[in-house]
Image 1 (tube, rainbow, N blue to C red):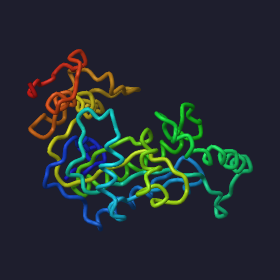
Image 2: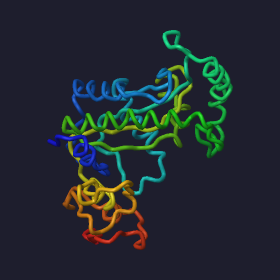
Image 3: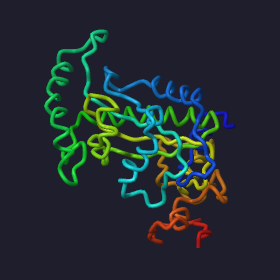
Image 4: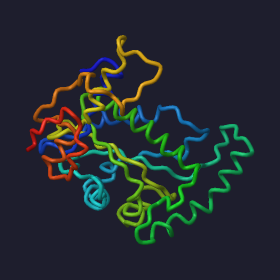
Length: 276
């Protein structure tokens, strides 16, 4: 197993298809994974608005996959069959915590957001609308940043324990859970928005990693030491860290193999072409 944070992070390939015999983490391991997420430092004073929902502990995991995640339209090569356990990251309205010293300006901001939260259900009822609406309030950025921190910590701990992960962004389909009687207030009574989820399992059938990310691992070396690092501009002379195999594919190979549409123009140098 990987011994450094860099190795753990780099080994977190994106699972695109789960093996039929993949299993979810044990409940004991899941407790450890959740603990890692809850222990992350937040960017704002209150953490009251950050929640993690565990669908299978309400007997709702299969329904969540079929009735919520199935509404995603931009997955190309990602499937959820064989996924048994997930962590779903939500955010809700801030609560003034008497144990925390709040500045009067912060208290005023929390009060000012109440109408936005009050009307969230109505916004999500409009055809084609998302939970956040067309105009993204600037204050919501903290929620997405913090849920990203929490999900990364959970993913790293899951990988440390030997599991594989699948990351999914959910904000655009929050309405499919919020207005579904199986979920809605059954998940929690306060209004909420899903930000993302982390699917965790023991065995991937297919995983993907971009060539640039694969090479980026080898950018931070003594001979390539620099004042700035641009992983999106990594050059072909930087060696890849992982070799492609039957399970791990270049992101473009994987999409071709599984039926996704990929413009050949965007295939990087070194594309294997094995899927053809």
